[in-house]
Amino acid sequence: MKRDTLAAIVIGFIFGLAVALGFLILPSLLKDGMKFSFSLPKISLPKSSPKTTPTPKVIEQTGMSITEPKDNSISQTSKINLSGKSPKKSLVVISTPSEDKVLDLGSDGRFTTDITLAEGVNTIYITSYVDGNIADNKSLNIYYTPEKF
Image (cartoon, rainbow, N blue to C red; front, side, top):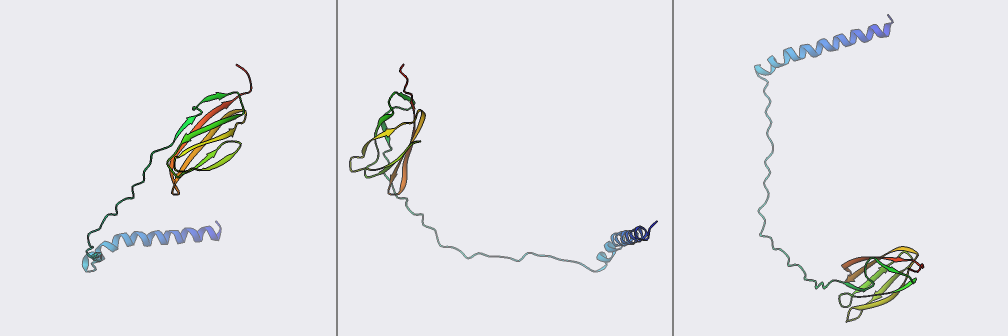
């Protein structure tokens, strides 16, 4: 055998013997007088005053409705009229595959705009914002084909 192998065997034997003796002798040493005690520190929290719950701000949400076109409709023209109603003084964002539009509504809340369609399915996303918060989301699928039925 090589010296390195023999040295590793001897060191391993000595280490194993020390661990075995530690397991045999250590319990008797602990019984004779070495006692360990451990306690957790006590933490006390100051008493808090009763909490008041804030009253939530009531936002009038009448929702948004799309009157034209109907969802999943088929168009044979590339331009359609999109119209609907949203809460008063809201901002409406219309996003299509080919364009995006922002409409600032007045006091009546009605909107109408022309949308250009791409051939195939067009998913139109309409989002209404009131005071910077999203009031409502809608999505429409409009199919455009120039073919005659």
